[in-house]
Length: 105
Image: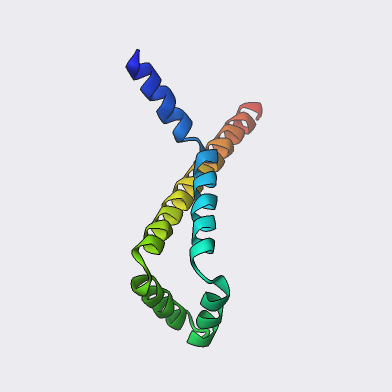
């Protein structure tokens, strides 16, 4: 019976809504711990080329506190998991619609 409860918990924790809530929570914690206004000002002063912005982002992440780095990684993981589920949903929906359309023809 423990396995059933464990599988139930895993299914509930892998719901896309949990990923979105986790992403939002990580962003909220980051917004509380980092001055967004200063980050934007520093990013704009770094330059407008993609290379300059990537160098700025890399330097900013490396030189920040470990707490912020952990929540940046958590936000990225939650975002990737949510996008994966959205893509899988789109592919599944599209394939079902194509099968129905092919069946009608």
